[in-house]
Amino acid sequence: MLGAARKCKEMWQAIRKADFRKEGILNETNIKLLFDRCSAQIFDLTRLSTPRELIDVFDLSCDGMLSEDEQVLIFSTIKEKMQVFATECCKIHEY
Image (tube, rainbow, N blue to C red; front, side):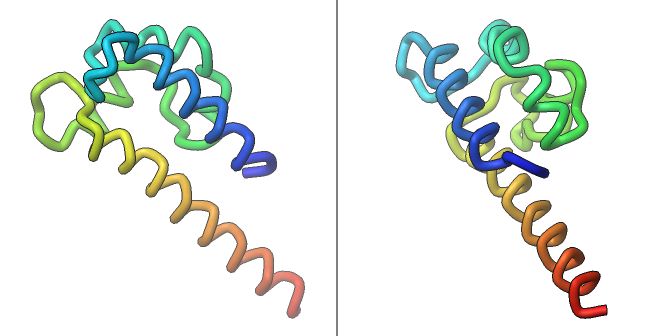
């Protein structure tokens, strides 16, 4: 989780570049482009290692694409994970 804000920023920029039509939707090809650019960051933050895994986890509408809301869900999940990590670190520090 170290450097998570920077990694999220890099992922967001890669998502914007992959969505070259500015539709706000990422299909499987766009997600592969995202993985080509940011696979290390995606794995560090979500532990997902393939485009298919990312689609399976975050594609709530089961249409094979990630809508804007589903893309935001990726970052919301990372934020929640960071909060849990920070809380655990505070508990360790208190001990």
